[in-house]
Image (cartoon, rainbow, N blue to C red; front, side, top):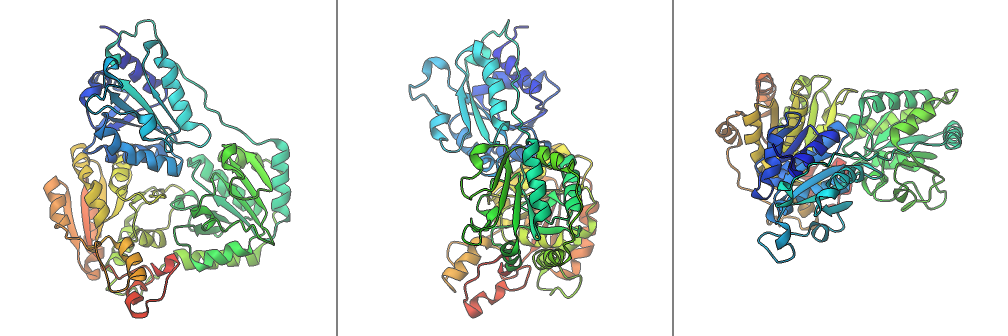
Length: 559
């Protein structure tokens, strides 16, 4: 059998550690699909929309630490999949998109669906390449995966001209290219140790650059050894055990006053594995730059991400885990920080605390999430779409060292179900629960069909408040009593789930939540749980007062 460029590309994927590809088939890359047919090392997941496929690939990358892979046809397919490119760029996730292209003789002739990905997605991509020469394919494929994963991870596009895929590849062999993984120097490690030892109120601010189990275990050891509290960036709540006394909570789109106070008092911020964007710096307000300026140690593997927004006292170009391992090797006498830890406890409780009783019956979604949390095993995987409903999850669910959270840190609506699909395929023996709003589910919930086809053990929870709730809350603040464009007319979601072939349940009142959740969680296979929610409810039961006082709100506690 002739060894084709399509076969060479498929073998390149295997060499780079790819074991799963998400996509929607297109005639422009049929030879690649044919090549994947004969390679059992790669699981091809056929999705119902390219945007869903790209979001699932991003989620899979978060779970594996390797580059996610999505395939799409040119033109409309590539633009549909661009949602994942944007998410990967915003959240620094390695993603490789393989795009079928018109044949080489017709390039630059305005052929049907022709696209120049480099120009179309300029400003989003880390790198893009069009494979024009068979001899360069091994080098370019290796470079694509190295680029996606080195420095600040991000999205890369590889264009595959249709005629190139059937060219003979005899004599060509796959290549790999080393990924740059910088490590801290001994002097930098010793300096950080001295700064931590001298600080009275330090904070370890943790991002998502490294998400491995080993990193999390070493992070616990670092925190305990130095008696240093840990706060994590948005949607990174699983990076540190939520029941730990040094857990300070996660930052979000609208940070609680308790966290603002916490950061105001800190006398040292050690930022590890975060680019210090707006969410992880409280809107670029912290570390404080005005007098008295807060000392900052910033650790990240990309030098371009350090010192761009904040004056940095110590810049360390290093991976997060490499740094943590280095500093664990220092001798240390733990400093007593009782008062500071008490402040940490207050911030954690105010931001993530949830009452065991007294939750009003009108808060149906709160009761449903609490019931689900009680059913979760320690290694459960939670995915959240973008929306106000996620605030219940962050307050109620306590993540353990073995738990995983896949959230929409950049606010991309529709990520919940595709992320849940990816997690259920990656961890078939673990509980996976995807929390969505009604708006987000109707954007990407058709991947429930894929979950049913795969018999994925995926539980999907839909908060149905007949509204684009997050936008509605902003609208109520800006234009009280004038909702417009944010109301939704929804189907019977439980019945829709059954129509797809999943089990379907509906929770319409708080009294039934525990029993329905217990039954739904015991079902093997896909399940959809609809929760009839009130758009004016919030985790702190304050949203319903919006129309009464019309006062501006600026914190998540009021959402």
